[in-house]
Image 1 (spheres, rainbow, N blue to C red):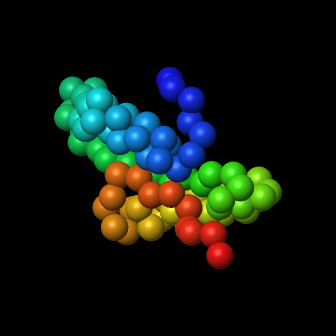
Image 2 (cartoon, rainbow, N blue to C red; image 1 turned 45 degrees about the vertical axis):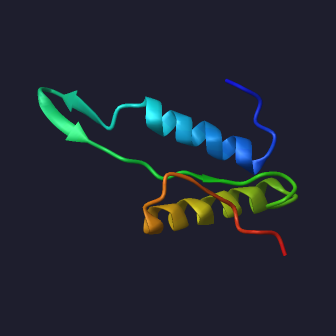
Length: 78
């Protein structure tokens, strides 16, 4: 893995993971398709505490799920 030091590099890493990874697998002979949503937060842009970063990443993940986007970073800082 390459170093991740800003929201753009996090987004690129997640996009690469999505592009490289399978979107289906087989479980006990049954084909299963899947997708995933990712939310990220970057210090200090999205928070200065672990709790603030967690909450920003969690909110971004749910926004990503609702918009069906591959990755979303935390909300813009005020």
